[in-house]
Image (cartoon, rainbow, N blue to C red):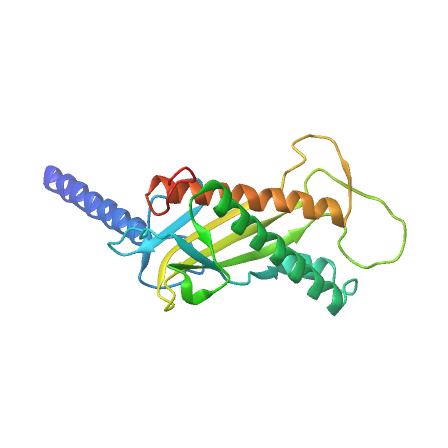
Length: 227
């Protein structure tokens, strides 16, 4: 009787373990996946990479980069409530979008054999970049005064890039949250709008290098040395 009870206990434990394992496999951290057809893939140097089910990223030679979207983090908006103006928000969105677009375009042209076109109709693939949850540590507002601000890091943000066909079908998505730690020291540095731009631009170039490496290894783009 005791042995039978023990046997049933072992069986139940195995069933529960199997159920938990299946549950863990079926769940994934919540992030705004661009399309329900995208599935987790080898992530390379990103936090997450999603690719269309049963597909590899197709090879492309010409790409169009859409205007980047920028959203500030809820924390930043809450902490600076009453300090920023609509003009401040418009400038931050515009300038950080410009920095991200430039980093992607220049990186793709220098590090691969891809042609970046300004005509969407000519492109084999469309890149839709987004900078989410932008949190800037240093000053970036039009607040009068001569107060100096010192930080060790410039801030953090989430890179969210979707690769689409010219018709709009999502093929892949790259997501990565990272600190803009361009200072690379333990000392405080006087920070300003200019230093914020510089360090976040370095972060965007880092994301671009990871992207081009991923695409080159997967054979999705020609190498820069290709004839």
